[in-house]
Every structure is written in structure tokens, then in C-alpha cells.
Image (cartoon, rainbow, N blue to C red; front, side, top):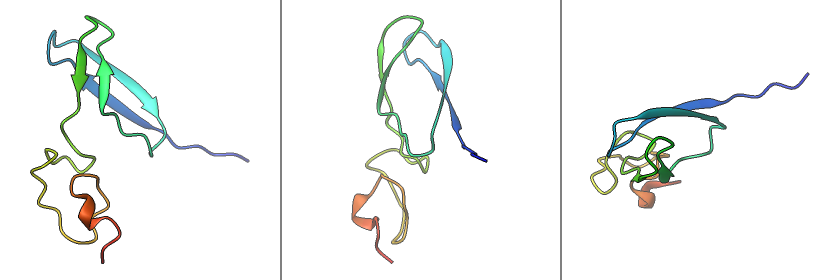
Length: 74
């Protein structure tokens, strides 16, 4: 038997407020996407943990992307 897991990401365009979803594997993290409604490039300024990139208050051991100096540190 083969089993696969997927995550469903939901997005809202910063320009037109249109929304859309993408189903993908867990390892994918979107950084820039074009809105399928108006074509505007949207940039994701949040990390996988929900913090704004550059404003992370994660501690050692965090596996998110906001504060890379903590990746793999325990």
C-alpha cells in the first residue's frame, strides 16, 4: 500500500482580495505566487511558524525558516 499526505495552502491576494488554494506536499513553502485572478505577484512575508520573517522570536530547536541560525541547534 502507498499512502501520501498533502497540505492545503489557502491564499488571499494583497491586490484584488481574490482567494485560491494549492494542495501540495509538506516540504513546500511558497515565497512568491501570482494571483490566478488578477495576475499580481504576491510575496509571502510569513514563515512556516506564522511569524513575520525578520521578526521571529523562535528559540533554539525551532525548525522554522524565520531565524535560520536556530535550525538544527538544540
